[in-house]
Length: 280
Ligand SMILES: [Zn+2]
Image 1 (cartoon, protein in one colour):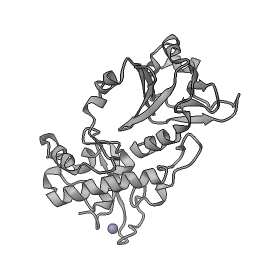
Image 2 (spheres, rainbow, N blue to C red):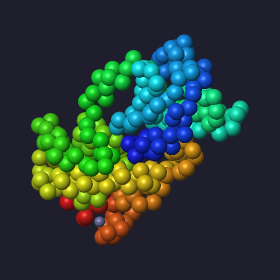
Image 3 (tube, rainbow, N blue to C red):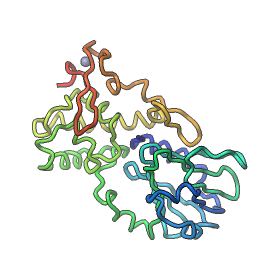
């Protein structure tokens, strides 16, 4: 699943469609089968002749803003992504759901194999901010200055105290944009064992974790995200963050710092990878 850094790379890669005049937003026949594409084609017709002014990211969501008040909320789900179409009549990828055509190329298509993505109209930007889960979204781990004080406040909430930090980090109400990969990598960088209960983390460890999250997410964006099987940016680039991962997916391998065997633990049904020697 694309995490915050991959979604950010997608956002940046779509900048070539900003400011172009839209011919139409077309829902493919396939998209009509799935409830997350619940708006009708006629509702998308209102965008014809308008421009996309900005694409924002909140956590793992993208918000398309236009030169009109309606906005479109987009989530890539497990396997959704955008592809820039640089040629006219270019063959669409399978599982194409939404085609956006402009007066000039490139056009762009949203394809989504597992149909867990979302592409939905909201009447205004404010109304989308009230939408769950955006309304309760935590701090953005990709801010240029990590909001440490707010992180320390949020992690101190009572309902986290007796939970393992490895599962708490996936809660988007704490830091938005962290998924399974960057959860393991942030804990490895902070030298914190994922099975520690939050209440046992000392203040300096919490700070170290906040710094590690920020560093890991930013580094992932610089690397164009992690590509394990399918992730590409819309202009076709693969990510390379997997080349510097310390622990994710490396069960049984050796820790690059100490040589100990990397372990995997299951927390809330999700895998966490860690070095039992370096991460205390
Ligand atoms: Zn180690």
